Image (cartoon, rainbow, N blue to C red; front, side, top):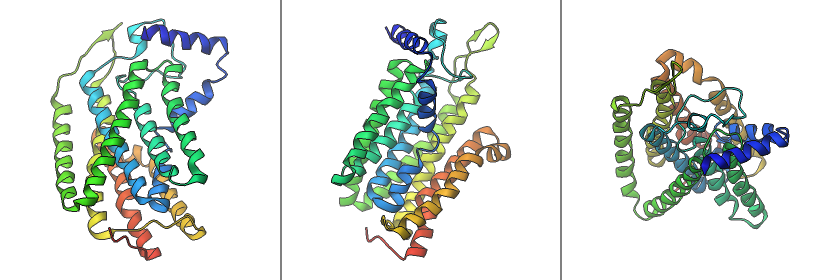
Length: 315
């Protein structure tokens, strides 16, 4: 049934001469690249609480997605059925279940949508976020790179993470002393996850003498997810204990401060990955790269904002 569904999209794509393909490709790629800038802007400038919710859910989703991928080891649709011909320039050599693009895109779009829903004049943006989250998942089916179950589970995983983080943060507001214990527990789980993915067995299946998925290459994505969540635990502890910055506000000066901080973040996302992986190796470099990005978002630039704006949160 899932293959027939993908074949239907493939027929649709061919019958429309791929007119929607560029849009679907860009939307899909955006979810794991520069979409991050939007919840970061919300965290720094507009709504610290909901921005933090979105980012925390995102890092949790990325961590869980990586672990599930390396545990389930599900192959891509064209491995299951050679009739599937994806609309991508190069076939991804990675496991399929669940869809990372879907989990990350859904977490950021829906998390940002929660912030937009607070005010009447921005509620339309929430609707747009929901549509974009659904389209991001759909794009993975349209392009033929994920089965519907990859996308559905990815979507539900993100919704579950947002709900869990929402409940946890509401509890920590009433019991702030408990958050440090959970941060320490989460960091410990991250360390155990590293041991797990390094030593668990992986399938080594070949087709025409070619390895279907190289598990060592897959570990790079897992180390990114682990590094992000591990860095979040440290950065969140530092921010809540010593920094305690307050949002800049959506005035001209506040927006300027936020945009100034997004430029280095863009450069880190676009150009820092390869040098760090070359310096530390693919796996350790991936962990360091994601950790640097998360620490900059959660703690370092908020410290700079506090120094320049003088605003301090009392919570």
